Length: 288
Image (tube, rainbow, N blue to C red; front, top):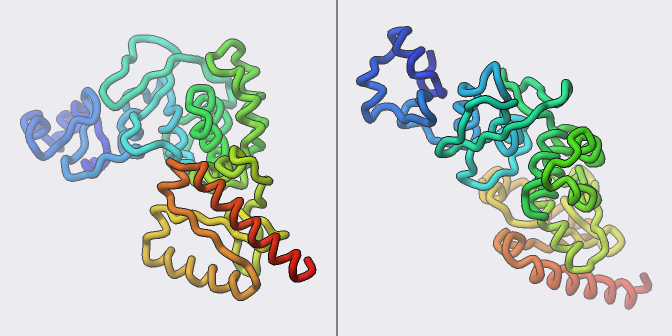
C-alpha cells in the first residue's frame, strides 16, 4: 500500500501497514473522514480528488473541478474543494468536499486513471451552469479542447436534464466558447478583447514551426500573456526563440501581464486597440 497516495485508514490498519495510533500522529494527515495520506505529501486538487473518490467508489463519480482535473482540463482556482456526484443517499459534504446529488445518463460517466468521472461534456455543462460568466466559458473551452468535442455538445447534455439550475444561460456561454483556446488564461484574454469591442482574434495561428495563441494576421500582430508557466527556464527559452522567429518574419508581439488579464480586462482591450491602430496606420502609410 502506497501511503504517499490517499488510502482508507481502516484498510491500512487491517493490513498491518500502519497502526491506529500512528494514523492519529503527526506522520499522517486526514483528508476526509477515514481517508489519510502521509503528512509530507502536498495537498493538491488532484490528491484531494483521489481521496474523495475513495468515499464514493461504487456509488458515485468525481464531478465538477475534480473531474476536469482528472480529465487533464485543469481550470479550478487554487484551494478549490474536491467534488463528487452521487444519486442520493447519506453522503454529506465535508471540509474540502462538495457533494452533488443527481443522475448521470449512461454515457456521462467515464473511467480515467482508474476513477469514474463525469465525461468532458457533462463536466463542462455542470461547471458552466454554476460558475461566473468568464470562469464558465474558460471551463467549456478547457474541457472541449482536452475532450475534443464541439462546445454545442454542452447544450445537448443540458437538454437531457430539463429544469437544472443555470441551464438557461448555457446558450450564451456556448456561443462565446472556442475549443481552440488551450488554457483558461487564453480564454480570459480572448474575452477581454471581445468585451472591449475588438474584432475576434485568430487562435493558434501557424508561423513557421510555431503557433501564436491569439493574433491578427492582417496586421501581423500577436497577442500573448505572461503566465506562471512562462516563468520556467525551459518555457522562457522556448518563448524567446519563438518570439525572435516571428519578429524576424515581420510580426509585432504584445505581451500582457497576467495581473491585467485577470483583473483589468479593460486595460488589456485598450492596449490591444492601441497596438492595432498603430499597425493599421503603418500599413496604410506603406501602401497596405
